[in-house]
Image (cartoon, rainbow, N blue to C red; front, side):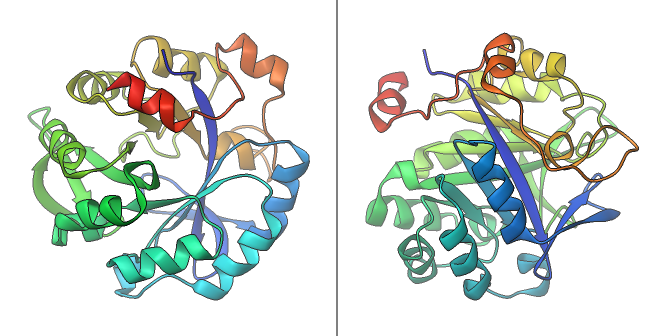
Length: 267
């Protein structure tokens, strides 16, 4: 069995670190590089950084910012936002990032997953699936930071990106994101059951119990955190933090990274 991971997920907007609620209103958190320095001190094992405005503005990655982050981060970093071709992916990886998160660009050109996987390996490709619930209970995928409907169902799209070469899925519930009200366990379970690659649950964590539930009941291989690692508590000020190793063990999480052989072994 894969060991569950806990991953801070940082949102970048116009070069600044922010935290959104349901992909809409946002709070300013601070400087991304300084936050990475704090996570170094917290001995974070893995980090995800997403430029939430790149696809909205129709631009590529901010390579100057990525270079600055790569110089500061002592842990592996996955980056998403504005990567639309293999050349951009290669430049991001050459800067020192470990993985590429593909969201909006994957709906426009699904073969991008296959192209990056072929060039750098499936372990380098994370498919970002942002999901919003419909009135009928359907779970539909959204692109452009939640602004556009893709016409894709979450489970069907998850199966497709796995077949195309994605090595992991970053699964975000737009309805729960930034609410502190817990994960969409039904969504996590449905996607986890449909694929054999690791699913990273994201959107809604407010307590350690929420994290345990995402892993034990949702079947998530990892949990990505936003609010819980940049705020003191709900409705309180900014405080960059990360659960201690003892707290992670109490949640049933292991601090070590998943290896390529472990990922292959799950398939």
